[in-house]
Length: 278
Image (cartoon, rainbow, N blue to C red; front, top):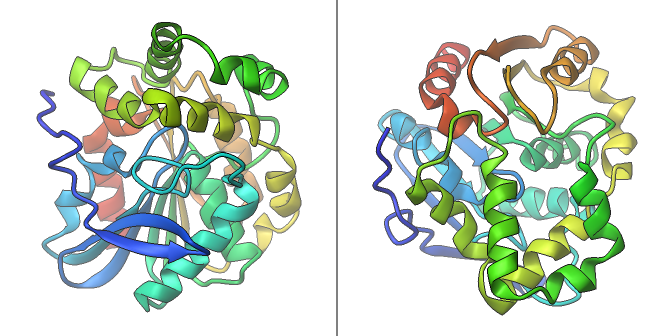
């Protein structure tokens, strides 16, 4: 599938101030609220092949997580899973929407689960796509960056670019187009972006999912879980286990798709989401 989207076309014209830190977002379409939440190391542009399919019948919301994409990035900033749920809860309150349908990927999964279970925010439904939700998670690369964040942050740009492309490219089962790879890498380039990339990795901490593991059975809405059968970041077996921990959760494994289902199988996400929301 040819990708003609670029950062300028995928517009985030609105800003929400979270404790002095700008969070960029967009709202489009009319109808019942449908919110998309991305994961790491991506941005809301990851939904470019998914969200537009629903804008004719739904009010669509998407944003860049704090410390990601076009939202605020700064030294010393807390961008961990311990703060992202508070940001999301505040953003939902700002949007003044009640019981939205939620679609979340990767770290977005942990974010919306924590918002539901810790902040007690109710959803109409929850669709999780290859989510970070239960232990163990965090690759050997992540563990290495956590130990040597300063060294990675100071790498020459050309070495950082090579690491970035290899890391992000590994999320997909099919090779990413040059356009897609550029979309995902661009926010992490330059002095500020490079520091922010290793900052968010260094702050990855399994305790934030451990805190909610025993309360997954208390989820108060219908749940659908989609998983790329070829996910090399979080094996599909983790998905089956997660589904078993959530009462009445639906589970669907998608063949020939990796962790980045939005690129490997966007049509499968659209079809499953339309069926589930119906």
